[in-house]
Image (cartoon, rainbow, N blue to C red; front, side):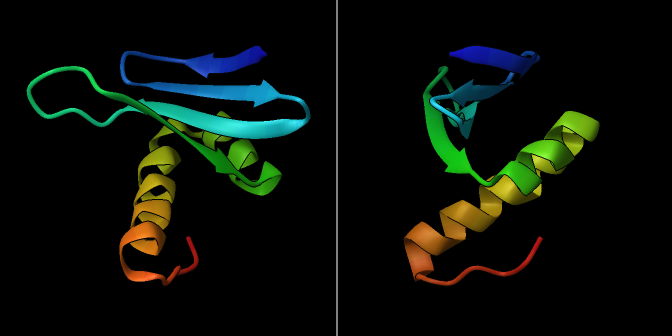
Amino acid sequence: MEVIFENSWLELLKRDGKYFLRFDAGELAVQMQELEITPEEAAKVRKNPDDAYPIILKYQNKALFGQVDSV
């Protein structure tokens, strides 16, 4: 596993040729979650870590509602 980017709430990881975001999803306590993202999304996060938030929301919406809006 390679850590590409890391800050207080977010890590961009590369593992077995795939990219992952690991982020703090907790409200009152730290609760780390991880999701797989595309190489294009990883490039966006690498360029600007603030782009991670809409990507996370996209995947959460897909999980909850079965739909994905483009980011």
